[in-house]
Image (cartoon, rainbow, N blue to C red):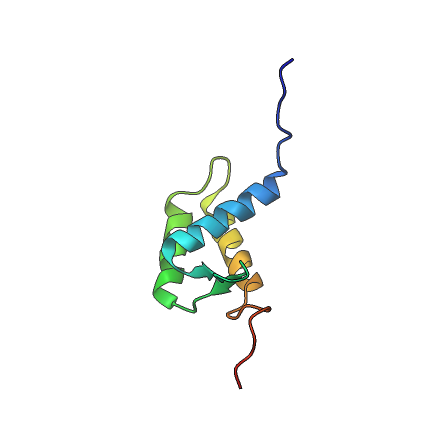
Length: 88
């Protein structure tokens, strides 16, 4: 019997694509201990991510939609890991 994987909703795939673009550009990183994404607050890396989104959006997504998704993901990520201890 042939088994198929259930396809993820398009919105989850687009968010995953945006996260990978941001990582590739160096705009975000993953907390090594806990796995949370962290904004590196690097304006040059952010601009590289927006350039990638404009020039190479995923199939079926306009450049404007791709840039908007990258911006939405950036807006949802903080610059600190919520599980790492705070240093006073």
